[in-house]
Length: 231
Image 1: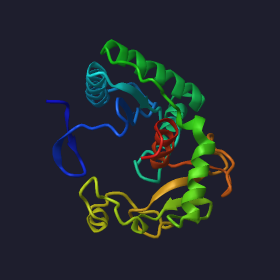
Image 2: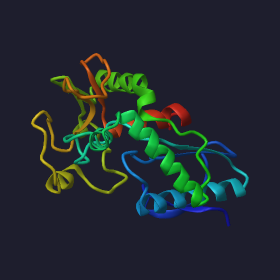
Image 3: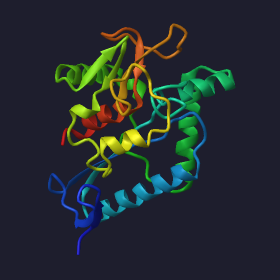
């Protein structure tokens, strides 16, 4: 018997079959580097370490990508609040990039102590701003997104299969919303692809919609496609 994995789409265990014979691409959402690693990080990355090691043991050529989130993760985990890295920089009286660099090193040192194999590629969100802007432009052209006052949001109801993996529909997500919804959004479940930056915001980049920074959900989409291709 080969490797069996739980398929979130079909909700059952299935025999693993790669898209390309002999090759496997794995993308794992890495840490937001505003503090030291915790037990939740260890649980997640040890689990994926086991999977990567076993796939290689089976003879697969594995490309393991795990990003570093160094911008765009806001304090309320939605689309409002302060960037977590900037908040840490303010507390520690350091530049945000110095904070991100320090906690990135700390994270990898901790994972080394747990004997986790380092990813083949560890891309940073701040290193892929151009690609993120390009994807936002594509989504706007395809009418899956809309711009309001310099911010761009994904229009969730336009994507009919949204929630297919989680098993939740849009109505359930609206009813279970726990955070205050931005008045800019057409729908409470819409999420930011690009956020307008206030003048004093330390990390901001020029875009067709003005100065701003990428949304948390956009980053992994861009980096996974860049390093592993479209599926």
